[in-house]
Length: 374
Image (cartoon, rainbow, N blue to C red; front, top):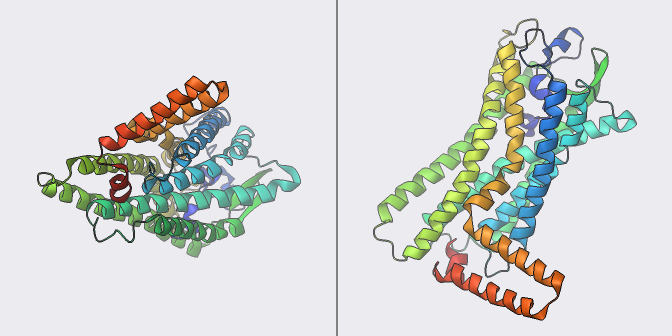
């Protein structure tokens, strides 16, 4: 993957083709003919809501999943924690863009403005790469767990998954470097804006290519993995040796698939609009105003939808993953008991813990098998 495609800071979405002169300043949402009004009001509101929801939700996921012991943990949980961490880091950049939006795209952060511009854009680039990478890894993990279970027993270990996550983070940090290098606070139309120079045809062509590669290719891998899994399950559902283990794998499959569907649904509209605008720019077909109103409006709405993805995953875990809910309930019970410090309650919690584990693993074929097959 290449982070040239990951330059998804808020105002590049709808100022994406903006050059450095005043004439092209009209490429922003305020471009004549734009149907959207009061973006300086609704954008800050939306982004602050995403910020608070994302901070609470992703911290909740990290605490709950991270509190699992080795016996009750699942290999896929390592990817879940890293995905939540990437989203958590990302949402901390949203207040900067919300403040800028409230000031009509003015990046007024004083002497630290340029550093904040580069840093927030870099974080967004890293988040974009790491998100799609972790989701692809989760899909491959589900494929190995369901289709190649016996052949992948040496690959699907805690050590290998930790190494994979480390490799994803290192790659994401490296691929985000161009976002740091090419971003600057630039005077445009009497205000300072955090923008990237998109005047180079080579850069635009590279951005278009990388947009397709970094979105289409991972989605293609995910579709192939899940298509193979569905065919495998349909073929072997009748002859399943362990129905409980099979039911457990199906549950994890649904949870991961829900996360992926949410990601694709969130980011697909933005990638479509971005591809259209980049293609038009390269074909020199853009009007003097920059982009047509429907493209400009579409970018604004699609970027809001894309950012919403950072706070959707915690809801998916809570409502669709009964294993996550049990662990959250157990954690709450344990914290409540510790707070009251009443011995009978402590004993009751111990009983609940044992019952919860017994329930969970008694209906799934045992904790050890859960760890290996899931």
